Length: 222
Length: 103
Image 1 (tube, rainbow over the protein chains, first blue to last red):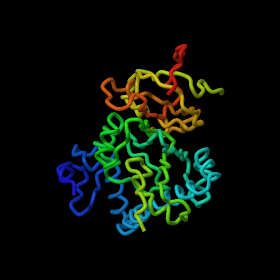
Image 2: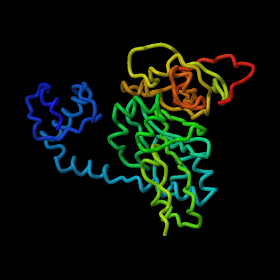
Image 3: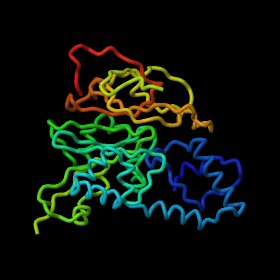
Image 4: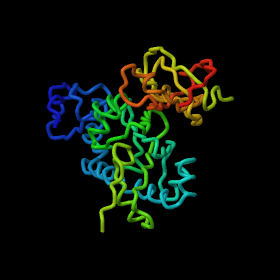
C-alpha cells in the first residue's frame, strides 16, 4: 500500500484503507496528483452506487494482466523465418500483426530492427506509452522515473544495468514514444538457430528483448 | 495539405513553454534534428486532452537527434541518436549545411 496516500484528504470521507491503489510510478513517492485522485474518486463512486462491483474491477485488471508478451514473440519469430512478412511488418506494423488477429486500435505500430550496427531501445518519457496489444502491460521498471529519465540521456549505462553491453561501434538509438506511434523492437536472431521452428524461436524472445533492454538468449547446447 | 517537411530535412523544435497539455518534452525543445519519416496525420492530442475533437488533424514526424546535440555531456558513441515523435506545429525549417551531415 502507498502510505503517503493515506495522509491525503479525499474530501468524501471514504476510508481507502481497504483498497489497493497501485501507484502509476512505483518509485514516485510524491502525493497523488489531481487526476489520480479523480480516478480513484470516480471508481469509488461507481462502487458505492453499485454501478460496478469490486469483482468486476478485479476481473478487468485480471484481463489486462493476462495479455502476455508471447504475442510479440510470435510476431518476431515469424519475421525471422519469413522475409516477406518481415518486410510488411517494418512497412506497416498494424497490417502485419492483423495476421495474428491483433488490433492496434488507433495507434500505429512501428517496428524498429536491430542490426549488426544499430541497437534500438524504447521509452516513453512523458508517461508509459507501450505496445500493449502485442506486449501486454508494461513492467514497473518501464514506468519508473529512473528508467524514463535516464535511458534517454545515458542509454548505454542503463542497458549495462540490465546486463546488456552494447559494443562501442554499434549505434544506440533511443525511441521516445510520445504520440500516436507504438514501438516494438525486432531483435537480432540468435546464431545457431538455423532451421528452428517459429515456436522454438519464439521461446527465445522475451519481453525485454522487444523493448530493447536485452538481446535474445543464445540457444543452449543440446 | 502538403507536408511541410520531407525525410532528410533539418528542423528545429520550438523553444517555447506554452501552458497546458503538451506532447513535446522539455529536453528536446530548441534542439536541431533531421526528419526520419513522416508518420501521417492524427487528431491533435494537445486538444483531445481537454475534451475537444482534436481537429484539424496534425501531421506527425519522427525526428532524429544526435545525442551529443541534445546532451552536451553525452558519453556514448557520437553516432548515438534519440528519435522523438513530434507534431508539425512544433517544427521549423533549418537551412541545410552544404556538407550535409548524415545521421
